[in-house]
Length: 383
Image (tube, rainbow, N blue to C red; front, side):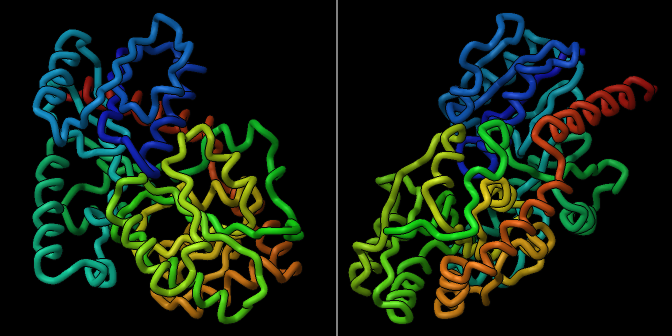
């Protein structure tokens, strides 16, 4: 079977991590298929040493933003003549001629919430987000079948966009192979390290991530535990406006020295970042299935996140939950995760149990390829 794998739009955040994991597995085990990989620069490291029988094309610009990239992707399909196109996380922003299976993990499309909209400025950003949602939905309708990450997203996508449930499959998210190959749980510690404690927020600068609360949380930690030596670690591009805003707020609150920006982290270096930190903090108010959740479980780093349904669905008892946008509550939970050894032990052990119920990166890949094969067989059976 000839499969065109499309990850040209998956350039940052969780989508880049998931695409990197898939590419890594496809190179290890092509399953007898002929692959053509159309990827973003975020997956470039994963294809180093790729065997010559796998055709690889790195797209420097996203098709969503570059007309020439869309043209190149269409010409690639025309030359390769695949049995199907699999866009792991769409929209693809290209009308393919081949049968198209598309992943959907954009919570703004599958299950937007009023709380998430309240993170936007009214009315301009509200109008922009609604317009973007309509635009993305128009492109999503170009696919023949879909893959989502949770049953909640499947049901919501079905209701909002009138797609038949029979065309929507669920493949849970997980962490990449790099998080388990380098020593399962070795990053976890029931006791905090001596010296500076680090709180990791491993996230791209999306509005719904609510990263702007981090300086307020740092100030609350200082207020509640003034002698604690800690740093809040973020992973933002040096030139993004979100970083400038966070640093300006931190300076105003007198906690600038508590913020460390480690810049954009290549996906394969993720485990090393977790090993250097003592707790994870994800203040997001809208997710489908953040990769930070299983990654923190795999590395044995306790998670503190928002007390919302999507977080409970994934983390269950392996996280501490705080009231969204409540910096004081977040600080209290983080101090508990950092300093209460019984809590740390419980969260780390629970994380192991929860992660064991999720598919491994290898198994997730196998499930996706099974879906691709079934999708193609179903299309061939149709008159």
